[in-house]
Length: 274
Image (cartoon, rainbow, N blue to C red; front, side):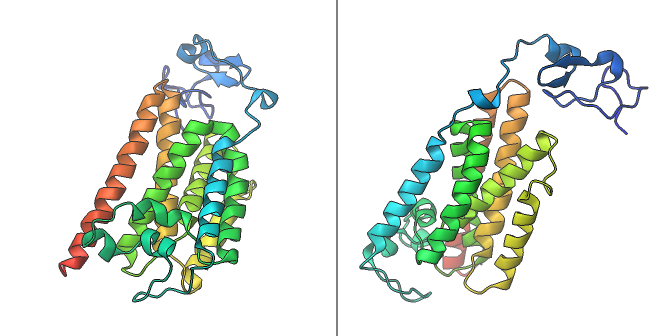
């Protein structure tokens, strides 16, 4: 059992709701947002009630619109693709695969591929999950944090794609898996059961499907899940220390590492080293 950070000889099961440090009864201060340690209790914290939180998840809606617009742009020119054949201007210019990164230096594909979808079922499933997770997560953490986590997850998913396969890949599932990971981190930080909330089961079921079904980008799903969880953890940790800028810098660093890793693997593959 953890011990109080001010009284190491005293075991305790209670942590400060702001910084997370374990505290004993003598160090607890009751606040509207939970128990706090002496240092955090002195800080003037704005209490955010559910009715005061933003009701419009702007980033979620914007992402939905962009994905749907891209899908509509594909129509009339899209046909099934394979590792040797790509069809349609939008797909040709946006889908992600190693050769385009290594030989064409077309780095934009690391982003654009996450806004393209193969068919109605593909985009429907991804957008449904994006809507559910966005409606839950964005009002809780704020639009800027949500967007930072989403795009970090997106790039981590693109790295996973390049790491796992040389075949073309497209879809928002990497970023959506990142939102699942972020939701799990946020729930644990708020002492809410990941399993009772349904997020744990959602992650497990989708991972099983990822490894069981054909034509599923396992790399995007696993990479996005890890990237989203790490980004959410960085943002949460930075906020708890009253240094939110560090959280955004951590997301930027994770995104940069993902891009650099994808480029390095693509070039290694082109030269026969991977």
